[in-house]
Amino acid sequence: VQLQAYGGGLVQAGGSLRLSCAASGLTFSSYGMGWFRQAPGAEREFVAAISWSGGSANVRDSVKGRFTISRDNTKNTVYLQMNSLKPEDTAVYYCARDRTRYVWGNSGDASRYDYWGEGTQVTVSS
Image 1 (cartoon, helix red, strand yellow):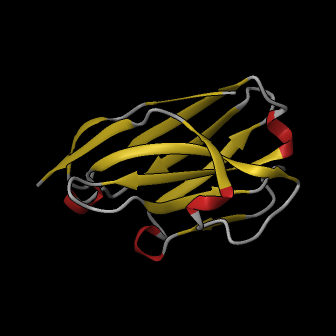
Image 2 (spheres, rainbow, N blue to C red):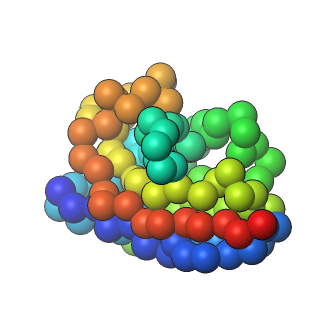
């Protein structure tokens, strides 16, 4: 299983970025996917997750209304659309695969995920 996250970069506050995570080596449509982030000196934290079908999603409170997670199972890709970015969104963003097929629940728990991408840096300037 390989997960490759990309799309990060430097953006001004109020701007937008779309992160993508391309997956290979798995039956992508069978697994929930998640996005996490880690800022310098901070713990890794949950950002958003989406079920295997895309029918259910969950985002952390601090990004609700600004971030949207989606997936395209025909392209084996999960996306994180980030709008109205704030300096506090600055972090390395990681995508991850839920370890269990066809299960949805506790999606914010990092221990649910077994494969992680290398991360993509998002920097929001004030």
